Every structure is written in C-alpha cells, then in structure tokens.
Amino acid sequence: MGEPVPARRAAVLGHPISHSRSPLLHGAAYGLLGFDCAYEAIDLTPEQLPAFMAGVRENSCWAGLSVTMPLKAAMVPLMDETSDLVRSLGVLNTVVVRRRPDGTVQLAGQNTDVAGIIEALRHAGATPGGHAAILGGGGTAAAAAAALAGLQVDSLSVCLRDPAKAGPILAVARNAGLECRVASWDDAAAELASAQVVVSTLPPRAADPIAETLAGSSVRLDSQVLLDVTYDPWPSRIAAVWAERGGAIVPGLEMLIYQAVEQVRLFTGMELPKPEQVINVMCDAVGAPRR
Image (cartoon, one colour):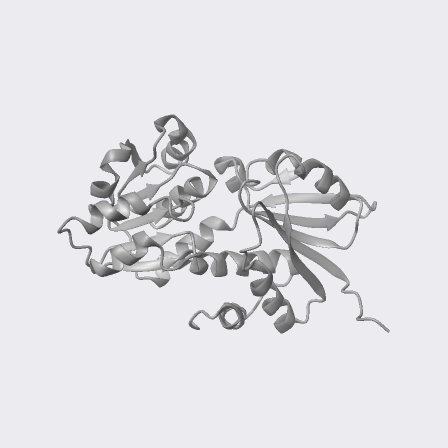
C-alpha cells in the first residue's frame, strides 16, 4: 500500500521557484498543528497563471497559495475578492481558497508581506521615527512602503533606476500620510547611508554596485538596520558591507518566516493561540535562530 494522500493541498507559485524555503516553513507548521496538507513549490509564469487558477477552482482540495515574483500583480484580477491592503498596494502574496455552500470555489487575495516586513524589522531593533529608504520599485517595494508607514518612520526615499516606476510606492506613502520622495539611482549609496532603516527589494546581486560604493567610503552605519529581502546567497554583498560598517542586517528569511505565520493562520483557519511555537518550528526547519 502507498502513502496516504493528504486531505488538503497548498503551494507557493513563482518563477523561478526552486530556491523557495516556503515548503519547509509550511510543512513544519502543518506538522505541529496536525493540519493534513501537502505543500509544494510550483514553477509558473504569468502566461501560465490563468489556466492554472482555472484548475484550482475545479479542485476542492486546495487550502491556499503563496504567491511570489513575478505573479504578485498578475494574480490580483483573478480573485473573487481582495483585502483593502491588496487594493491599496495592487499586489498580493496570498490566496485563500474556500468553498461556498453552493460548492463553488471562492478565491480571496491577501497580502502578508507587510506584516512580515514589520515584524522582521522590529526583531532587528528598528524603532519608530527617523528616515527610511527603499531600493527597488516592484510589488515588494510597495509592501515595504506600507510597512515603513506602519513602523511610523518620519520620511521615506525610494531609489530606483526608472523614476517612472515609483508611482505605486508614492501612492502608498501618500495614502499613509508619509512624506516620500524619489532619489536618483546615482545617489542610492548616500541615501542608504542617511537612513535609519533600509529595505532592499532588489533581486540577488542587483545591489552589488551600491554595496561597492559603500565599501569604498568611510561611512559608519552604527544602529542602522538593513533588511535585504533576498536570502540566497546570504549574506548578500550589500548585507556584508552593511555589517562591516557596524549596521544591523536582516535576511529576507526573517520576513519570509513572519509572513508565513499569517499565511498558515489563513490556510488552516486556526487562530494559533501560541504563534511563537509555530515560529520556532519554522526557524528549526530552515536553520534560523529560535525567537
């Protein structure tokens, strides 16, 4: 006899996706909670997404989907409903799958990236006030702007190669009452050096030139916090330079853990009375220090 088939199914979608740690995180949490659900990584492009989601609607076993690049914006119009946060950001990272009484499937879009960023920065010692900076202009950058507004920073600068892409981030900041401006890419290193909190949303190694500029300077980064949403390779070049200059560094794995806790709550429908236990088994699964 073969292995029993899990009652539910969940997955992380993206392209590429083989590096994802989400299956380890969710698998550890489901084991602790006794939630009978298989979680896998599925490589999917935006062009393949509509057909895949049509299949999700036809299968009652799905509990939820984690969504990463490049699908965070493409998934939004495929939802039956979205949270206020998703409507504000224009991107999601979570799809909750529920079956209505009439048997049809309902897809609800959520964004847990904002909570993940906030908790990761707090864990690293970030405090309210001061100036913050964001590297990049995609969906995760918009979530970072919302998170920094939630942390109550005083002002924000956004560094990206194409200023025309800053519109969504500026809109998020404006809606939150946060002063925000676009900085030149050539001035990125100086912008980062002047910020108490920095979030880099760039792909792996894309921030290396900025890191080299910082490495060639005499600037000190004591008490300043950098969250680099990438975690492979780790430390990234910019994280290594930041630490050498006295700053605190936070890998994207921290953000991934904290946002995954909220996804687990949404997928399982459980309230998680002791979320710290879920966080600790997730940390064990990916070799991160327990809280």
